[in-house]
Length: 318
Image (cartoon, rainbow, N blue to C red; front, side, top):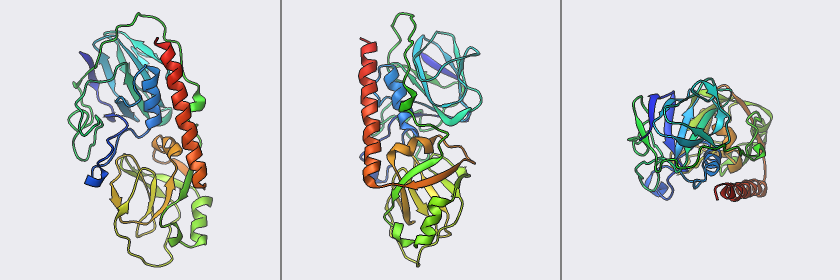
């Protein structure tokens, strides 16, 4: 026994940090859009940070707990409540048997992550339990959750019913109100002249309604290359910014294809994936060009913060 899904929400899927090592075979990494939120949620519960959780998009699910369980809710604020009472995010929460966890309006961001102590008991496909919707495997039979689905825990909560009153320093998580996205030059950056490139960093781009786990189409100034060139399909990754033949920008996300034939003008730095993952349609962003060393340093600092959090939380469960 574990959790029964009363209402599935708009798009609720099982996600972990993704399946690596298979892009050469055309299989995408996928995994959580906001991997930082998922990792923090797991660490708050004493889990390995690679454990799978539920990614809840915009309108979260309604879940009945059939057993006591310790949970954490991280990421975007989708107004979580237990039995109608608002609960705090970014800390462990003890949910008792028979209680109902539900979500309301999206206050900040658009993706919340639900993790449980010990993790969910799900089959592993190619080293991951992540749901890859387009291929139909992983998670719950390769699909989003549905009403009446049952999710089982790897282990039942056996701790005493006490207050788990620790939380994280929110300096670890980016300000979702910050619309500046840091990028480095993409491999085809110099296919475009300097005046065209200047528009990338002086104008805002809007996340269009064509936005999903695969990628975001951005509305804004069109980019045209200096001359017509043919690009053979080349490797792309999370955060790659492509330019279509018409000059539109496409920003690739967690379920992106493994290769693409459009020029790769920019690459979002890893440390800013979080802000991208939490952006709703209609949100405006502005790109800021940085050097590779700055991108590496930002990622190194993030990794050091996560390791420090893990060490701190470990002592809480001793």
